[in-house]
Length: 442
Image 1 (tube, rainbow, N blue to C red):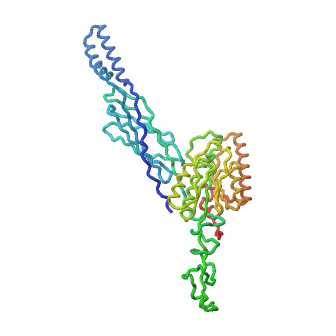
Image 2 (image 1 turned 180 degrees about the vertical axis):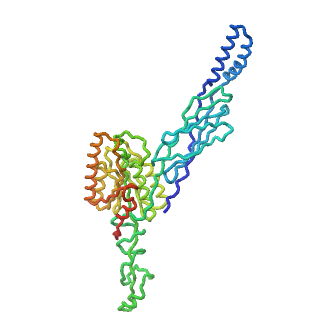
Image 3 (image 1 turned 120 degrees about the vertical axis):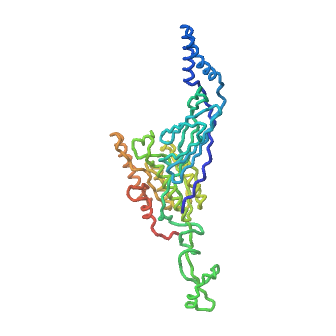
């Protein structure tokens, strides 16, 4: 099933910017030069110097007497995040005031890259491009600074900060076919066979006709061979079909990069995927695959930064899930106690976390103890310890040992585990295939 295209982005009209005008340095130097020449002509008695200074003073006088201010610059920016999550397209339109001759527009895009464009009245005041992004979720995309040149060049505006544009970048997703199923499927229809009798599933048995059986299910050949009394009819019975109920639980309390030196709370910009980027990608991939198979998917967030989404299916529900997953942001304090969310009965619970503390692991083991099938998705990037100090290396080893013991305890209590990290061992699709063993759910 293909992911629906996101809704077109609406133009985000920034507030009008009122420039603060100052006299041009050229005008100031011209006035100073004219005054100097006039004074020199007066002292030396050289009238030719006064003739040279007169045009300069007249021109400077007209420029200095012109009233400035009261006009505004309008900057309109439209952002359009791509469906792949790899870039954000932007289109900026600038409307110059009547007194402005030209405008220097500085665009600062993600990664603090700067791009300066000079726009005058003879060129189209529209700029377009694509900003490459390395992370998903809410983030600043475009920051503008502008400076104007007044007609005649007698005044310039102090560089002013223009509108800042942010966007929620959707996470990319992987396509997969083999998915783990809950221990028992529910619902009155779906794509999976259940253990109860009904319509739409595989063959179950042949039995005597009973009230409620449909006439089209009569097996006339079996009736002709097995009927002992007149009026005996045999019907073919099948298993009913049902849908799976899946709840995705995202642990967004922290957002860790591969560099261990950034785990202390001082975040550094990185172009590599962080743990929350991996969690968003895994959640969107699983939601897309399950809903494409006709199942119902819900969402819970341990950080509390995103609203809960009750299980549902269909294209519109998938759009809602995608936007909600993309809006999950870290809380900044991973030590805060998280409230255990409620999950429906007979559901498959998928917990996406780094499992660096006991909270997510304890919840996963509790759900497994109550009869749910629980899959723990490890989203921690492969740690990079090349730049750590001796003390940081020791602390990391202790954290890694505690985490290893925690994962082993989860496995001992029936929590199945996969590591969602492409390019490092088996891909997520291969690992999910190993978990999707054929079973007849109740």
